[in-house]
Image (cartoon, rainbow, N blue to C red):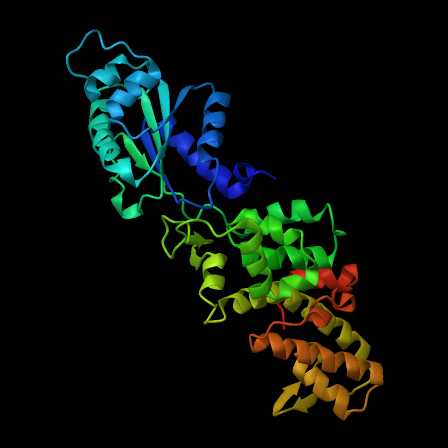
Length: 377
């Protein structure tokens, strides 16, 4: 799947299109790294919707002079080209898509936008020629305030977990059978790569077991893909983004800094917990069915009285299986489930043997239905 066809990025483009339809000029600040080809995607959407769109790449010159030249406008022999004259010379309903604006020329463009926004107010929304300007690496705090004819759509919190899962799964389907392992790999890749789809693509090409060593495999990704220039703990460099409303640091920065706070390990744990904990609950239900009829109820365990085995969590079930000397198979299963549950409860990531254990994810349709309608233990 392409970046701008994913739900989150697609919605971001929808917001820009909606603002233009409402007669607003649009500023779309982007980080230097992580959001490629936005200008091309927006241009394609504009043309597809029937807009008269003219892309202009900033060359560092005076904004008004650039636009007169790029659009081939006739100034009528005017002594001085102004923003007001530019607006008058542009076609009604025209959209000028300006891209490649960086910090070195941003001040001039910001002044231009302020004047152009004011000049736009005197023109009806339908006839109003519009400007869509994309910045790269300009801090968000330098963006202009929203005006009557100006919207600012920052490229932040655009890509989320659902986007990366869709992107990753579409790639994994070509190399991995669509089963529990693919789901688990997609979840781990999503947590490690976050919004960086190039890292996600690289990780889909690695062995499943290697994903459980995030520091090492991301180090290999750095060597393969290269560390982006000027990537720091700032939004404008691409080093910080909100990911599903949570501010996160780019994985390459975490690796470069040595992951002193075990952040990558926690991301790995979160991915495993999202897939393994539901599987453990389904296995708990299966274990209860195997134990039912082998022990009498009610029963008291560690001061808590239970009327039904189904009310017991994995720990008490393991206790009953061992103290009542149930079959070896039941005790082994109960102890294994307890060990895995305790590891995840203590924020410990599982190793490859445990997390990729096919038996852990083997359930019948009845078990899956129960997991949907009944709260987890």
